[in-house]
Length: 229
Image (cartoon, rainbow, N blue to C red; front, side):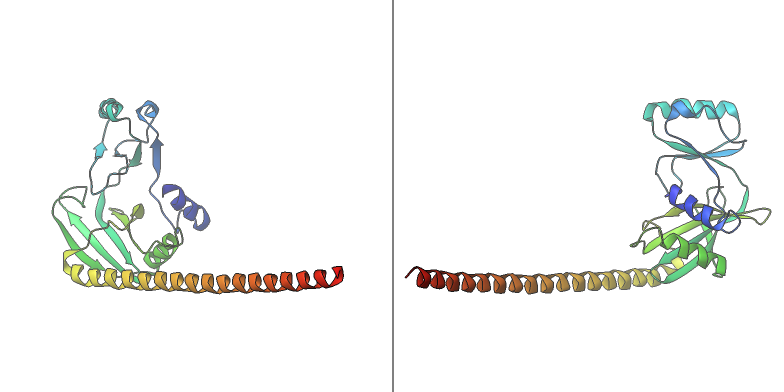
């Protein structure tokens, strides 16, 4: 996913698609360099705030790399930005919702957080439209954004369908998901139905051709007999 997001940024520019910069470590063996502290280390593909730690000095970074040697998973390092709040831009089919998350922890997606609806700006809509282009079937996803103390915004990551739903809109969003699933099922069954009809038509064509060839063979056999006589 990170590679696909970087492609979007390269096409649109850092200003229009501001990704938070990452340093990638294939394993603990590569953890010999890092961005300027403080940084955030994320391990593997775990989400919901797990395996994510803020590191403020080299000694902690070295200790962490020695722990990762046991698991030997990949990890990333990101510059830590002190944020006013996080944004979650949620996309379900054609429906977009944006809400602000404010919590007591720097990881606002853990523990208790206050969720507030936010206006869907043209920028947020553009980000959603660009992410949708990554996969044809990318119908449910969310974009996590940090809004820093100096009022800058950086895209942290894109989550797939395991996005979680805000309590205040959960029932409504579940209905959007239900409608989306039913729509996709109908389209899928319709495509399958067309394939079956096309196969039947093709089978009929093949059968007609076989009958024609058999008739042609019988005619040629009769002509051959007449010639021999």
